[in-house]
Image (cartoon, rainbow, N blue to C red; front, side, top):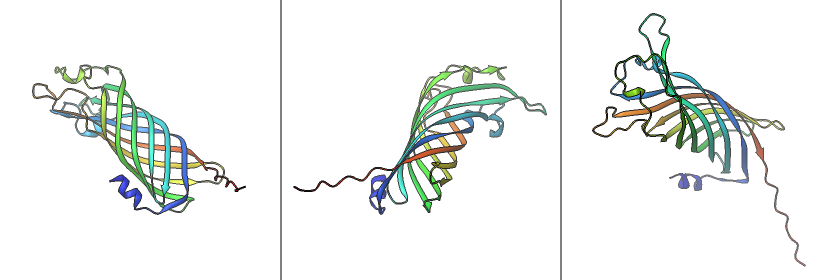
Length: 221
């Protein structure tokens, strides 16, 4: 499908190649079923955690290109008390390395563009902090070590970027990630039937555009 969309786009005279970094803050939670007490509404279950990484973008077609990233991010969830302050009594942080493969579609002129990104992602949990704070329920299911460190899912975002003449590309993006994999086993005999990660992030980025040198024509002798 992506190949067909790319082939239908008008080609650029010169490929646009950019490499840079992005970073920001992310609201992360886990969508459990059966539901975990002290995690509803969903806003109570979110952790604010950092994320960031390396961005590579390649476009040979007008309005459409490929974006590949290598990111570090923290995921997890929070359980809050029922008192009026609703402070976080328990938090669980999971550290991931993530690799998204995204279609990058943009509109606008060279200097200012709006864009969307959409595509699959894979990830791996490199560290499970095991949770901190007071466990809120007698049920121990969500406090056990995770059983599935490998993750896969989809990501989509929208944003705006500004191309400067000599200072690179600056961009601002909002992105939503939804994991199709689960952090806990979900067979018929397991307690959780669903434990998918959900993340909403706001990132700023800086990329440097590389302009390929035109090939020199060799004159015939």
